[in-house]
Length: 218
Image 1 (spheres, rainbow, N blue to C red):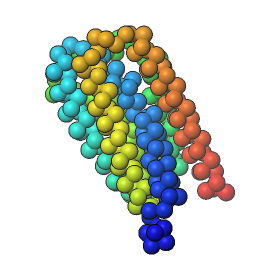
Image 2 (image 1 turned 90 degrees about the vertical axis):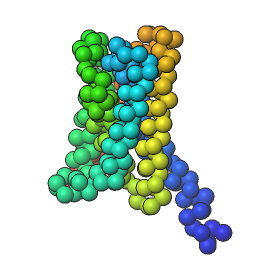
Image 3 (image 1 turned 60 degrees about the vertical axis):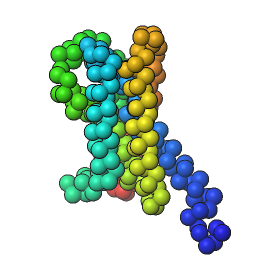
Image 4 (image 1 turned 90 degrees about the horizontal axis):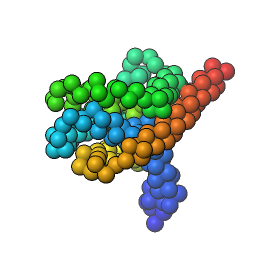
């Protein structure tokens, strides 16, 4: 069976599954669904749970399109404009590190300033971009596309993107309808924890880009 259908071999399947989880957790750390769900809760606190959920659903639909476009055409766009993947890794790592820093030292008054945004205006920004599909998530998706060698790995990348949106769906559903049971201390712990994870991922992207660029120049 393995000789006739090599793509069904256990080794290849395990590699594809490993690639799927690797890309998923890279995008997960960059997109930060849980702390960003709490951020979404903060900027939509003036709305009812039903209105908040409508905004979330529209934002998730738009964010899914953004990340799928990044998975399909991100690397090609970089080639057209002449930006190397190593340079993009460094830039993505800087952006991810900046987002992580903002999570670790968030401005508590920022949510109060965003309450004045209109219902429809906030669907595109800041909900779809940069909360759901921010620079970090887009950068991680494009990097994942560059690392997808086989067709099955490309499919795994799209599955990972959809998996991130499912994660956002669950986390946003919880904060929209069950926020009264979430303790403020739990919110802060989650935000700080994912801030540290995100900062580590950003540093890893920067170092990988620097080492890769150094090897290409040698």
